[in-house]
Length: 324
Image (spheres, rainbow, N blue to C red):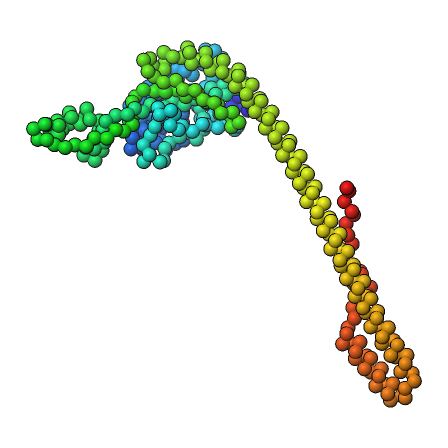
């Protein structure tokens, strides 16, 4: 588990980051897409940006009162930001929004020795929309802009569609930033704002930090056992591979040695053959004997027998026999 004392110590003065959020682009559904990524974990539209920033600042102040701290865009390694998905439908975005913004580093609250990730996002709701002048507009607003479109006398047909749009209601998601522990919990603004739920949120996370610490320690222990098991299996595999290489090398060495011996035996028979012919040439007259010895010389040159001593010198000796 990373040491929170070494984690990034960004001062949580959040109102200064508003400009960084609004300098970027805006997605088709209104959510901000800042150019910078080392920013607080806020996934909201511009109308909700100021309030979301204020909620995070107030939450940081509340945690500071209980000797905990929030680190924005924490640069310390070992922590992973959990990707925002459908979030049980509360943040269901348009399928056409394929390039969604997310911070490059997680926003974390450190409680004793454990870190908990925090994301604030704006909830989406289903709403009836109409396509008006190149953009989708809520039916209620469209009726104000062009009331004649709904005039029964003109019988104007106007197609409506149900889409998910930003609702200005905020959600706070807490999650495990540890790779081996999967956990998250979300608070949603319903009857009351997130600020009014701070007492429950802080109390819950203080208790959850205790059990999360145990879960992280258990996950680390299991990972360590798995690593040791993998290393042991790898050592066995390497040992088997090295043993197979030794056995193969000994087999190759034996084959080469037998080939040298076979060649030597073949060459020896040839030499014995020529020696016997040369010995029998003594009984011939000098002219015939000269012709026979010349042919023996030519035959030896044609055969060009290898030197068995050189062959043995070039032989690669086998490695030691592997242990059983």
